[in-house]
Amino acid sequence: MRLTCILIPIALERAAAFGGVKHNTRAVRNANSMAHSQTSSALDMSQAASPFSAFADLFNPTKQSATLSGSAAAGQKVVESFLASINSRADPATIVEFFSDDVNFVDTSYYNPIIGKEELRKHFYLHAGSSALSTFAKTTDFSAAAIVVDDIVSVSENGKSKVCVMYHMAEDEGNDILDTTAISFYNVNDDGKISSAFDVTEPMSPKPGDSGLKLLKTVFNLIGDESIVMAADSINDNDQSLTAVEKYFDAWNKRDMKLAVAQFTENCSVRDLQYDDAFSNRDELEKHLLRCKECLPSSFNFVIDDIAITKQKAGVLWHVENNGEPLSFTRGCSFYTLDKNGLIQTGFDIPEKAPPKTGFLNTLKSRFEAEPVRLIPLTMWVAYMYILFISDGILPGANALALEQRTWEEVRDLSINFFLVSPLLNLPFSPVVHPMLEGVFNLLLSWAAMFACFLSDERKNKPNLLPFGPMLVGMQFLTSGFLLPYLFTRTPEFESQVYKEDIDGELQAKVSEWRPLGGFLSAVGTASIVWSFVGRPEFGEFTERYNSFIDLLSIDRVGSSFIVDLAIFAIFQSWFVDDDLQRRGVTDGELMGLRNVAKYVPFFGLAAYITLRPELPSRNSELK
Image 1 (cartoon, rainbow, N blue to C red):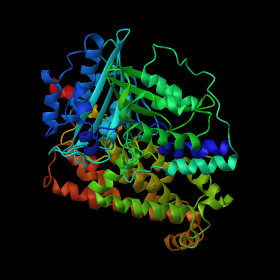
Image 2 (cartoon, rainbow, N blue to C red):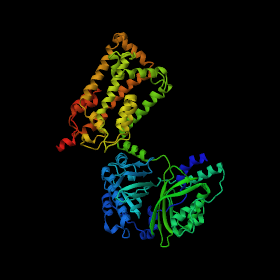
Image 3 (cartoon, helix red, strand yellow):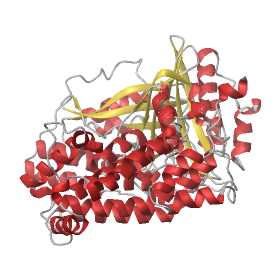
Image 4 (cartoon, rainbow, N blue to C red):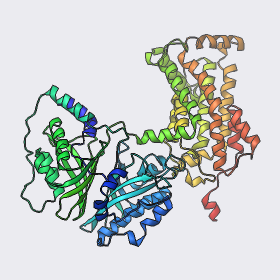
């Protein structure tokens, strides 16, 4: 059974055992235009010509449901306003005000839920444009797109409301964007704040279809057949309070497909987004369900987590369990419309996509598409990590994974002599290390510390995939191993004026703008160079110590990697300068002397830049 559990989350995504109905492609939408018009959305943005007209439609009184009242109407209005704020490209700091402080936000394009308003704000800034509900980036493929709501259902319960939305993306001209159909489910508190949100999007074409079912059938044929048994906790068929939607889920769990399809009208249209086409009547739907029944074990049950249902529509949030244990990556949402007899007329179902999740990858992809030059640090990082840790023969000495005792002793000794404090104070525990190796090591670390002057690159409204603070600390241990990935993943700079208070963290703000930092680290670097030539007289005059240093490098992977790091730092120190000047209100073409010194004079040019660059203003000073 363990083999089954490993394969199921991947295959189940494609199996989608109970099909859903779709209105969202043109063909299905046109085929069901009559049914769709009878259950028209309280928020119909399908004719929106642009993000701004979509925003206006949200507040058009003629498009609001006349049947909603109380908390259901209020909750729907909150969700509509949230979507309108996304379409209008509102700042994420504004958008998060629709949510409670402890919101649980699940975007199934990502692995983990976002918990809390502050984390959600960071998510919206960081992943803008990577999924529909991650807000729109300033420059992405969807930069002229809008969320178009196809249907919506809202109910109230104990003063709170539940809202389920079916939507797709459309271009500025009104043309639908393929493979962007999605369903979201919201819970709205009585204070008008969204406390939870769940969003799931259809898979990209080509649709997987029956491939998942075939895989499951092969797996369970190998494991052995299981007799179909009725779920122990099934509900009563004669319970008149149950809706057709709830009876459908229960009948599926019992594997009673006759009863399941009886909850649909004869001319139903059922769409499972794992498939290209709809199941257009009861007979087609039953054949599909029987194929699913044949492939899925009886221990699998679909469990309703939440439901928003009226006499005309229903939105369902669900997941799959195996013998009562939830399965990973098996959540989903469904949207149904009901006829006057309460039977399901149309339905639409989207299961959660199995790994790999695309949200983070989309964010990273957008970085490279916007700035292909990022491929340079990426390529160098891959080469650096391979050469340093894995390869043999490119750099001298054994690779880092060989874990040579001499290597670790050398790293330990250099660390003890950090910034030359121990040898200069002649401390008794200070180990003897070649002075030129000590000089290179401490010059490198002071250079790495100098990048702290760019901590303003990490702000509340500009988080990075790899936070700069921890990466800066990491550079003290693995130098280029942390610098390069930060460079090719960092968030682009859009601001032309930044304030000290914007920097993420009080300590970071103080360190970043501390003018003596350049002079101090320049002094450390200068002392390191001088130490290389005159420190530890027992290593002889320059020629002797230089020759012995070259001999050391010929067998030393650590020492030779330091030389590589110095070259990488010299190349990429310039990558921070233009953005840093932009944050200080300096436009292209201004301060060219200081700019060029900072970019092209290794180490000392950066130290001079820290001392002479314009200071970031303070909001407090401006208020005074």
